[in-house]
Image 1 (cartoon, rainbow, N blue to C red):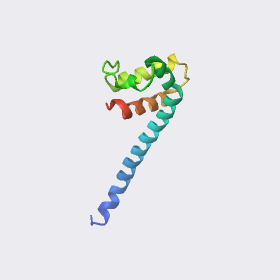
Image 2: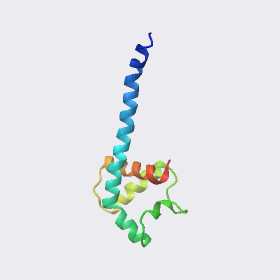
Image 3: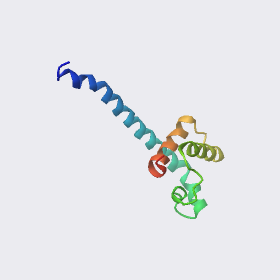
Image 4: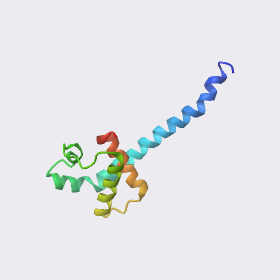
Length: 102
């Protein structure tokens, strides 16, 4: 393989990784919009102010990604959002990216 062929062989892999990265970021952005429209008001009422403190408090209910997804599902059902699995996943990814980092 020549030096010119080697980078061309890597191109599909690099492109795939780039698309995955873009997809995850766009999915998280969708999750942010859903969170802002459906969650933050209730959380602000619960905390008496900044609804985001629910994610940064010391006594967190959520300790891993599976628990975060379960919690988002629970809250979405409780708030009767009508979200599908993809929307729940988007909110989970947004919260993980923004606050939890699992």
